[in-house]
Structure formats: structure tokens, C-alpha cells
Image 1: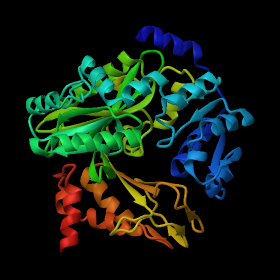
Image 2 (image 1 turned 180 degrees about the vertical axis):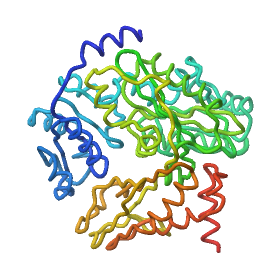
Image 3 (image 1 turned 60 degrees about the vertical axis):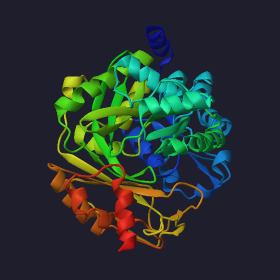
Image 4 (image 1 turned 120 degrees about the horizontal axis):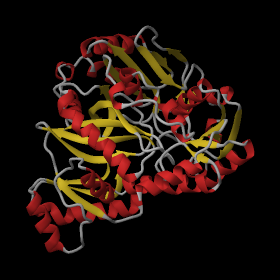
Length: 464
């Protein structure tokens, strides 16, 4: 099946000279920059709320496709395809979020004769269903969290038996979930059935399916990611690993590469298993395998079939432009890299700068009245904002990503402290004070944190 799938991809792959970027914000500008560097024309789209977006000024074409409501603009498949046809775009890059992991969108684009810069619809569908993904990973030898690779039934007795076999605490998850939604921890048997019922309701409402599965809940894991890159000719590599354990309400705040304290000998076999899994499912493009890591063991939790917000830290340490690679794969160009070519140089951090109150974390819309961003060796800023830019209340609060790179983790962290101090943004509230305080935390500086650490740290700050 994989061979047949790869052959179909080879026959359908083609070159293109214009890319429509089906997204907004910093990622729209990031993809646009990569396209220009590769000699490709770009089409930017916007909602009515984003008519003044800076990336519209630098695109070759700029179209408004709908009102501020994302469902009628950035999530409107028909409007995006029409924009591609009107502008002659031969490919569509989805960025992250919105339609980037929609199998139906990928399928519709390819059916219209346009190249989707991302995985095939079948791969997106497989990895988007957490039960099917776990089954595929086990078949490829990727280590998974203890728990059955089947859907949780309605039978209460079977549910109870499954939890007993796994051992409490367990976690109930929506098969179609993601982004920290559709999951509930069950500490003991008395809370099991209520948790299952509530999670089913949430899953049906949020993801359109009540399908659930159950796994062991790990007490103090870290969140570790492995970045992969695969072409349509059967070649695949992994580009290194990241630590994304600094999370608030399951949302990442700070990422770093490589993950501290994990030896190449320990993670190497896991990376190769991820590559083998990609070959088995006929995966193309870039993707990220997410793991929980505890007591020297890795446990697969999901795969993101798209470009990640945190891709810059891997670019900084690997020296590979991941967006360039995405586009080359979509053009049918074979990977020039082999696994032995890929190394890790130094250490990198990324801070997500959000338009939100640093204490309550409520979104903060409004006009940026003054902006000063840091510059210098080892400092990178990915953003679409400028002085005078109005931050919309309609979309995600991420407005910039501040990235540092240095020979060692300690130097990269010191560079981040200094870069955060030099970042000045006025007119709206941001999480900059929160990030500055976090980088002064001694336990974080030592790399001794897990996915629960940031929530505890915030609770202690509020109580002080």
C-alpha cells in the first residue's frame, strides 16, 4: 500500500511558481519570506479584520476572502480555493492552525488540481484520529503510553476493567482531540464514569465525534518533540528534538532545542522509529511526533501533521530551513539530506509573545503605539506587527516569537533574558513581564521542570 501511495504522489507532484498562503499573522509572513527566497510569487489572503496586515503589502496579490469571523474566512475552504483559482496559485500553504490539519481541505485542494504543501489527506486523517495513530505507531515500533489501541466502549464493566488493567491514575482522551482539549484525568475508580460521560460530551461538541480512548496518566513527564521531514520518494529524516514542557493549560509558552539532559544514544532509536512510521504510512512533508518522557522512557501521544509554531528552535540548531524543505517536498524534489548529515549546533529558546494580560492571561486587543524589538547575533524575531498595528480580538493572541541561539543552554538563556529586557511594546498588554520572570526562575534555569511545573509556579506567584 505504501509503495502504491508513494507512486501516486510521484505522478501528481509538480512544480509551481505561485503559492497562496492560507493563514494570517506571523506565520503568513514567515511563509511569504521563504517563498520569496525560493523565487516564488505569493498570494496573501485576509479577513475584513486583517485588511491592514503588513504581509499584504509585500505579497504579489492580496485578497480579502470574508468577514472577521474565521468560519467565514480563514476556515472557508471554498473561498480559499476560489482565491487560488482567481490568482493562478499552483499551491496552497496552510501554515499552522485553521485548516492546516484538515484532511478534507487537503483532499479538496488536490482534487482542484492545486498542490497542498502538507501531507496527503489519508495521512492527516490517520494521524488525526488518536486511536488510529497509536495503532500505526505501535506497528512501526514507536513507544506509546500504556493503554489499549482501541476505542473505549459504552459498556461500563469493560471501561472499569480497562482502567484497572492500566492502573490509576488514567486519562480519558477524545480520539479526534488536540490542543489540550478533550481530555480528563481520573485519579481513582469512583470518578471514572462521570469523567467518561463528560469527556464524551466535550468530544462530540468540539470534534464532532464521541469516540474516546484511555491511557495511563504519567505523573511527572516532560513534553518532548521529534521533528521529521519526508519526501515523496520514500526518504525521510528526523531533524532533532525539542522540549516543550513549559505549558499553561496545555498550551506551550516556551520551547527549547535540544531537550536538555537527553543523550543522543537514548533518543536516537526513537527518532529512527518515527522515520520508519512515516515511511509505513506514506507521509510527506514536515511533521512532529509528540512524546511524554518520564524515567528514561518515551511515550508517543500524537503527531502534528503540519508546521509547528516552535519550528524556529529546530531551524536554529539544525541549520535547516524547514519551510524551504516543505516547499521543496511539495514540488517533488528529493531530499538532499541523509540522516548522517544532520547535526545539532548549540542551543535555542523560543518565547511566545502574546497580546494578553500577564496576570489574568485575558486577551488584549488594541493598537500598538510603540514597538522596539531586539537585534544582534543569535537573536531572531518572527512577527507581523509594527507600531500602529491594531491587534484584532477575533483570533489567537500570538503576536510575535522571540528566538535566541548560542553555543550552550546557559548562554542561550542569558541571551533570551537580555532580549526580553530590550523588547518594548506599548499600547496593549502582553505577557512580556511573565516571560521575564520565568527566565529568572532557578529551577527552570537548571532544566528541572515537567509539564506541570508552570502551573504550580503560577499558583505560587499568585499566593505570594
